[in-house]
Length: 354
Image (cartoon, rainbow, N blue to C red; front, side, top):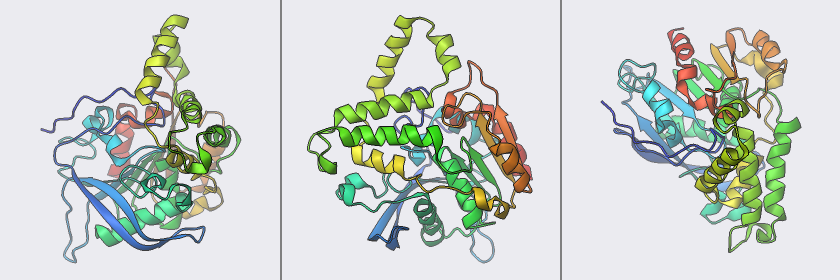
C-alpha cells in the first residue's frame, strides 16, 4: 500500500499548487532534447525536460510501451503536484482508475517549470519565449525519444495542461487514445482571462527592482500583486463565504494563505509562465479531435466561468466528446476543482472503459 505524505495547505485551490509531496515508487529522470527550436525561431542546444514516473512500462512484441498515461500540470505547477492526496489517493491505488500496477504514469515538468529548463536557470529574460506549442513539442520528444512511448492510453491535463490536451488532440491526432481536459476552454486566451495574466506581468515589470529581468533582489511589490491576483483567480467564492463569513476570519485566512505562498516563484519564470498562453487557440481545428474526450469545468471557476457557449458548440464539433460542468457548492474548489478527483473520478473511469 502506498503512503502519501500529508500535503502542505493549498492556496485557495488556485492555479499555483502546493510544494511537491513524495510518493513511494516514484522514479525521476531528465530528457535532454538536443537542438530544440522554438516557434519564435529561438534555439537551445539542449532543452531539459524533467519528469517523474509511476508504475512499470509494459511492452508489446515490438518493444512498444502499451500502458502509458501522461498527466499535465497547470501554470506554475510541476508533475509532482499530482502527488497530493486529493488526487493521488483517489486515482493511483490498487483497483483505482489509474492504478499504477496497471498503468505507466508519466508526470512531466513542462518548459519553464519545476526541474525543467527555465529562465531562472541563468538566461533570465534571454531565455527563448516559449508557448504552448513548444511545450507540447517538448512533451512529444520526451515521450518518443527519451521514454520510447509512441502511443498513450490517456492524456489528462489540468488548467494549462487542459489546454495542452486540446493542442495534443490537433497536433498529434490519435497519439493519445483518450483526452481528459479539465478546467479550460479551447479558445484564444482573451477577455478577463488574458487581462488578469497581463496585469500580473505588468505589475512585475513595473516594479523598480525588476530591472528588465536582471534583478539582484526579487521585485517583491510586483510579485505580491501577481500572487494576489492568482489568489482571487483560483478561489471558490461560495466556499470562502461559507468558511470565512466575517471580515476578521476572511482577512486572517487571507494573510495566512498569502504567507504560505508569496515568494515561492521567480519573477522571470512567472512572466514566462503567464505569457506562454498568448497564441493558444485550438478552436478553428476542433474537428481533428476524433478520440473520446472527457471535458470538465466547474461552475465556480473565475478563470473559466459558466455561461459561455463554447462547450456546447465545441462538443458538437468533436464526434466523441462529452462535456460536464460541476455545479458550484461550498465543497468545490474554484479553479482548483480540477485536482480534486472525488468530483470526477467516476466519469474518468467511464472514459477509460471506452
